[in-house]
Length: 443
Ligand code: IFM
Image: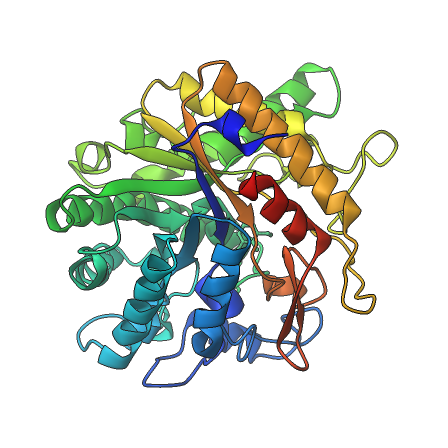
């Protein structure tokens, strides 16, 4: 594989998220986030860990940005911790928090690494959660205020913005399954959150349009082919509703297409949260869609009261290789989701803003021989290239992730990095997959 086949203007990046790497959870005036509260509660995280220290990126950002450049990447995607810059979520701004992101951006630019900023990667200020969080419609105003602060602070140097990271994940796992912060299991709180997040996409994009001239404005969505587990009508119904839940509920309202109520009837209750004019206010003209792809999902016809059917991660261990998370490795699925997103005819560009694999990496001396991860990247990049050659306008790819990091409810047991982190010493060791990227990108 040759990087030049992707074209000169192609963005090659690594993606990270604030809570997963920064640490410094209560330093320099930062307020608590829902993830601080959640991880400090007993038995929420499998290995009983938290992001209190994580990869200590807050103090080591300069070395980590240098490492990104050294591996040959020309872009770095990172998120802003809302409570670091606005400890109570609204009102007072914490200048020391803003200064940190200023330094990260300047370091990136000094190293020739383009900063791509995500405004929300799941760490809501706890103070806002105490007022209902995403279930409270006032979040539209709170979010707009926060985005204005960030656009004014970084908009002179940051051109690429993503409003959200994977709305599907943080609403469904946090508000419905209760396995992520804030740990709620409430189908109606979930519905309210879905609608408010979709409206906040428009609020955030609107603020960025106004305050960042020439801004490149997108958002990122978890997308996955959904397959039926049988051939009967009930299996196909299950597939259709799971597909609407995973792939359509967060994309189509922003394109002015409404909620896919026919496919996923539970969405008819959304009327409770819709106000007059929302159908117009929710529409966004994106510059790009960030596609986040890991695996495909299966849709067993498992009835859940009110809700419909349950999508599950694929688990076809008879036929396909799995990651250590138990996710099927299906590079063809990446082609499929890119093709489908392009099919809307509404996204001028697509960017793969996350793609990667977890394996049980072992440190052997100073090396980590993660051959399977290299195979994963080779095959998924080939799928991107195939899409590009077929005329699908995908012009960037971000590997998840630069560093091993705090993998939410899994804690530190799963490793996704191109760089191994020895958490006891915070030493970074470039894995074979990191060397592979360096080789690819230097040619
Ligand atoms: O670690 C997460 C990330 O925060 C969001 N996308 C999926 C990754 C792997 O699970």
